[in-house]
Length: 318
Image 1 (cartoon, helix red, strand yellow):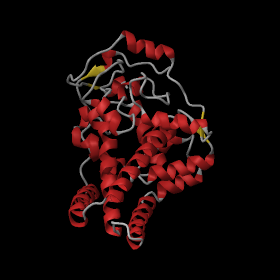
Image 2 (cartoon, rainbow, N blue to C red):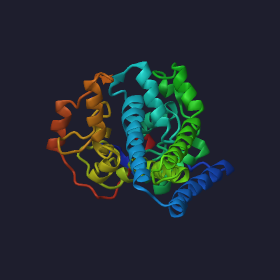
Image 3 (cartoon, rainbow, N blue to C red):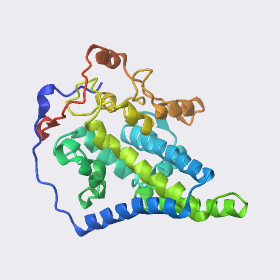
């Protein structure tokens, strides 16, 4: 059982000043802006088709699952098991989301749980503001290297280290694949094109995916309900749960991160968990970890309605 932090751990934000912005940070911000601008202008220039939009939605859903189910619930929290082959396949799928490699991602997330809403939590909206928690932390050169000592359980797999090192190659391959698919379909007489499929399948899908993922860092620590007193500002938000296939039940997750399921109640839709259950039925994954009955009961006894102003923990309370 993961104990909740005592309420006395809540305090006003304090901590060291943010690292100065470097030219690398500025360059990354420029790339981010151009990426989103390219998605918008690409739609205007190359239009849309049902097949392009379908590929966009499909790649959004597949890669969102790869982030929520694999990067998060598998690599970060080990809430289920799989074999080495599927571990590699899943890692490649997650990397295609353009959120770096699995070791880097999971190391930062494990650090987040250890330091949630303290000054050391690099994407706490309470400590560092909305922009920093949403995109700024990801773009900062200060977070370019993760603490790999937090990933000793996966660090010895050379294929995972390879993915981390060459993480940009996989999204690039996806972009090329989208263009090739669109060109091939157009040659076959389908109403689309290589550029249209590149815009929708890669640029639009990836931009939506990134913003959807990072709402959990930013908005799920500000808006929603707190069922559990976790000593931080994590909240359950049903709308974000729909967008992210179940990650919006964030307060549940912070109360018991070892569970494969984040929607603790039957009405809390958790698509990622449903997919993992289906995969377990065909033995792709196994040993899914349940929510302890005591944790569910605890949430029934104590519920605190949110949309209240969040407060932050000090580093001493971490």
